[in-house]
Amino acid sequence: MAAQLIETLAPAAPDAPVGGLVWLAKRNCSLTPGQVMGFFASLSLLSLLVAALCWFGGAKLVTPFTCAELLVLGAALLAWARHATDRERVEFGAELVVVEWESAGRLQRTELPTRSTRILLHDNGLVVLRAAGREVFVGRYTRPERREQLARELRKALLAA
Image (cartoon, rainbow, N blue to C red; front, side, top):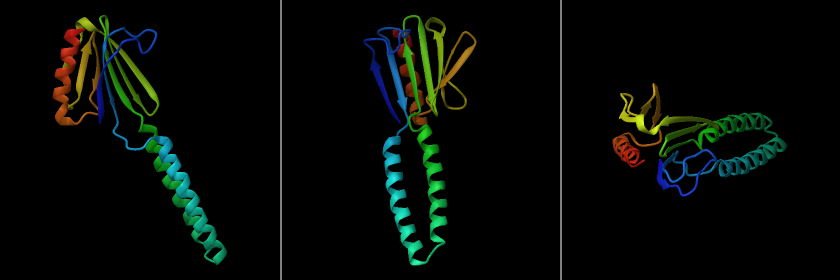
C-alpha cells in the first residue's frame, strides 16, 4: 500500500474544505494500466507472429490455441486494470469529514459531520468512521498490522480539525 498524508493548501474540489488534512491510500501496483496494455500488445504481437509462422509451416492448430490464450490473458489483465487505480481518501475539515472510496472506476463519497464522528476498529479489522447513524470503512489498502496505527492517526487529525 502506498499511503501518504497530504496537507492541503487549496481545495481538491469546489466544495471541499480548505486547509484540511488528507489521507490518501492506494493499491500497491508496480505497473500502470497503460504499461500493462503495452506489455500485452507486444506479447500479443510476438505470439501472433509465432502462430503465423506455425500456420505457414503446417501446424495449423497452434493459431486457435494462441488466440484462445491471448483472449484469456487479455480478460485477466482487463480485470486487474479495473482495480489498479483503486484508492481511499479521507479529508478532515472544520465542518465535514469527507471519505472517498474509488473501486473499479466507481467513486463513493460520504460526508460526516466532524463534531460527531467517532473512529473505531471494527470486528472485521478495518477502521470505521461513524457519525449520524452512518458508518464508512477505511483501511482496505493498509496492512492489517498497521490499521490500529492508522486509527490513532485519524483520531489525532479529527481532534486537530
